[in-house]
Length: 418
Image 1 (cartoon, one colour):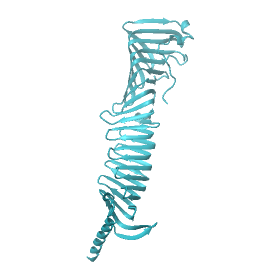
Image 2 (cartoon, rainbow, N blue to C red; image 1 turned 45 degrees about the vertical axis):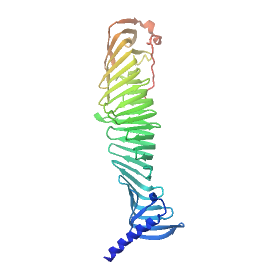
Image 3 (cartoon, rainbow, N blue to C red; image 1 turned 60 degrees about the vertical axis):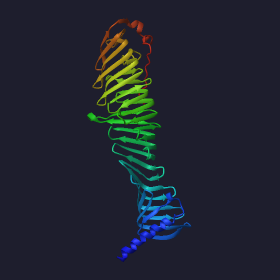
Image 4 (cartoon, one colour; image 1 turned 90 degrees about the horizontal axis):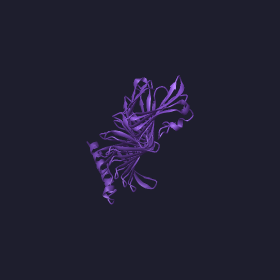
């Protein structure tokens, strides 16, 4: 009974001493020591201090800190603590192996292994700092952020709790478990309440598909990447966009990936390249291109406005290109091979003829609609419908003058996605 009385009396004396030590300070700066198994007064670097050992607990407003051992510096209103120190404000928990708490600033620093938990998000780092008044946290050195859907690693992270805004910098990597996307860059900002995020400074997106027993990786580069997680989840690549996925390559000023719909839209001078399966590359351009994928593979490409499709006519005659133009081009694929091209509205086609591998001139046709059918990636038939006009140019006129017959707007680009 005497032991219990002495222990209770000690806790009361310690709490009273902590309050009195700040009696003349501002109320919001008061740090109340609620418990310690032992207290020893001492002088450290010329400042009066108290060494607190065993089940140490102190409080400032709604902030509670627990640790095994602490030193309280009276004039500077500063605590150093060690031994798995925990700070809790009712919603957020921060844990560190050792740290410092500044009562006047209402700011805590954590060293060595630092962890912050709030709701479904966990942050780990070698160093962390929390500003209670601003509700702002800062982390540096081996930073990781994990929630139910993703894992982020970076060099530094700043998190504003009120508006759930976070800024990650330096070798940022985000792995999204749900959609398989991995995003790299050097500067990332996330606005959780707005369901919006942005990656800048050399952003790169990877998506690895291992279905069917083989790796098929999507690469996307641009100057800016933006992601929206609202009702229509999408990833937007902005400025100098380069895309590469298997036999598909593309470039554009703007690209929108609808991750749940397995489709993408290319705008601002878009160009796509696609291998037809026999080493014959097809190039398609227009004002906008909509690509529909099926199980991560090309299914349909819709090209609208100034649509232009080009394919190399022969691997030997490198200067000869089959060409199609119109207001709209629809390309259909199956099993990674081009099956059909439909050209609508002021449709024009130009294709070269060959006889046992030798050039045999070219045909030029115009009409309301042109359909080109392929077998094993090569032209099998061409159908022209409505307002049909056609011309044949013999080999003697075409040879060494192929460029003179190219359709208006022809521009073949050897460049493929970076």
